[in-house]
Each structure stands twice: as C-alpha cells, then as structure tokens.
Image (cartoon, rainbow, N blue to C red):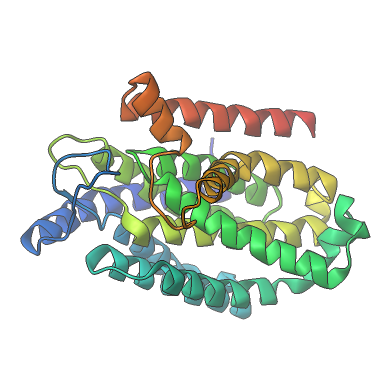
Length: 324
C-alpha cells in the first residue's frame, strides 16, 4: 500500500508522462507545419528532416509544476532555478529555430549559472569544508565549482548527438535525485525529479519512433544540463544541513558527483583535447565523441550505442552508491 507521499510521487510522474505523450505530437505537428527541422550535415547521424523542438515539453512540464507547487520552494531558490532554466531554454530554442553563435550561448549559460551558484554559495562552502577539497582557498573552490557546472551543461548538450543518449543519461541522474530527496523529506524536489522523468520518458518514445521522430534540440539539452546543476547544488545544501542525509556529505557526495557526471564530462574533455591537439577551435563540430566512435568504428545502431552508454553510466552510479 502506497503512503500519501508515495501516491503524490506516482501522480506527479504519471501526470507528466501522460501530459507529455499528448503534447509532443502537437509539437511535432507545429514543427512540421513551420519547417522547424534539424537539417542533416556531415556531422549528423541522420539523413531525414526531423523536428528539433521536443525539449519544449520539458520546460512546459517544469513550468507547470512550479506554478502548481511553487509555494513549497524557497522563494530565492525557485526564482533562480526558474529564471536560469528559462534563459537557457529560450536561447536553446532560438538556436534550434534560427542559430546562435557559440560564444553568445556560453555567455547566457554564465549569466544563468551566476544566479544559481551565487544563491548556493553557503552550501558550496559547507561542502568544501567537509570534503577532500578543504585545502583549497574558498574563492578558488567557488570558481572551480562554477566552471565545473559550466562544463557540465555543455557536456550534456553535446551528448545529444544520437537518439536517446542525453535523455537516458538524464534519466539516471533524475532517478538518483528523486531517491535522495525523497529519503531526506525534500519531497518538492523529489516530485520535480519525477515530473522531469515523466516528460523525458515520453520524449524517448517519440525520439526512437520511426514515424513520429523528434529531437529534444538545444532547448531541451541545455535545460536538462542546467537543472542538473541546480539539483546538485540543492543536494550539496541538503547533505550539509539535513540530519536525514548526514551519511551523504563531504567525500561521499563527491563520489556520487563523479559517478553521475564522470562519463559526460570525460567525453567532453577528451574531445576538447583532441581538437586542441589538431589545432582546431574547441567549438569545431566533429565526430570524435564516444557515441560517434561506437557508431562509426563499430557499426552499431543509435539504440545499441545509447543503451550501452546508459548501462555503463548506470553501473558506475550503482557502484558508487554501493561503496558509500
């Protein structure tokens, strides 16, 4: 028998899933009517015109949850999360529809992160004092955390290069967040995690569909990356201050972050080093990502490649949780 809180969690997930399953076909129809397609190029892993605004449903689901349950959040927390999410969603959507210079996108990411990182500075400092990073000066660690999250947003964005991969990595992340926040009685963040999970799973159905295929686009991948940063900062805050999460503090939380983000950040840094070694700009698009290598060199499908990296990512997470 489900408890009242578990029932709310189920309804949050189911409502988001059903809402997104209904909304995404409408987005696909709108995209087709207005020619909002991802145009294949030499780097693309597809050859057909595919709508690329599937990530709109993520933002709608999150925005509706904030409207319904916003009073459960701290006002400053809600404001910085929503404003940052909206900024990255809008710039991502504009890039999907028109095109935005990479440096301008980076600037918007920096602005969004300045707000949310600034709000959680006390939590970041408490995390530093109870972790292996205690030896670092306060200001240096704050800058490193900011840079880490900036890299993370772009790492998630670049994982959206084949069907399902960014969505599956995000499912792993928000599943862990739902569990942690439920155990610590931060049910509003747990509910939000499940709302996001419902919309992602609905998106996956269409992303792998042959007839009704849709991409999440930058509006989806940038939004998910920013939400991962926000949830991670809230987890830092909860682990340092909440007695229910006292076993998840300092170095233990560091291991969790390494498990959650190690794969996407390793892939991004590896590609950046390759581009630098070849004398190419770091924003130069290529097919050197892990998923491209598995597809191009091993001849595997999108589904196999995404599934393989999903299992590897999940295995790393489970190993880290088991060792805590």
